[in-house]
Figure (cartoon, rainbow, N blue to C red):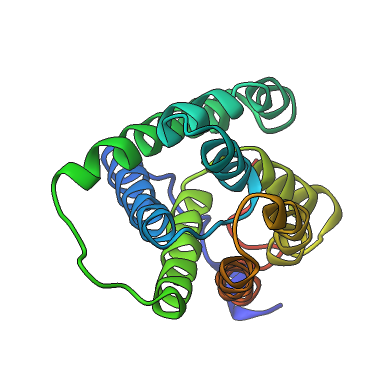
Length: 206
């Protein structure tokens, strides 16, 4: 018997611990999305799908992000449970608000897309990891990735990379190819971060 097998189960997070993790996670992700938006980049998942609609139509990004995630809540409720779904709804609502309102609080005068890709990818990965460890996510692609990791043992980072690639390939239709390549760099940074730090058997959703 290993030494770790005698340890008591980890206590559940308190309401305050969940609240601070959801706020910090969504804040990190909102900063990444603001960086991407400033330099005309993309990301994957439902956030990336919202970027496609935003760039193609000019509609407010935060509002599109909120609306595009609505169909996934039913799937989350049925597969991941009520607590996960409510936390995810709260996180996406905060993220939609932050991406629309935060740019009124600060401005970045100069930003190279390569720097935005690396920093944004790490911010996305860190934010999503915060949320995953507190039984929440940021929408459709992450819900599917976490579900496949929980049920089939597939690495969430690898699943996320595949889903992100589909969205990013569609980005060639709405933004310059150079910006798509920087966006792919950001997606690779995020996916590698999650693959290393979010492994099957750790922080699973029950």
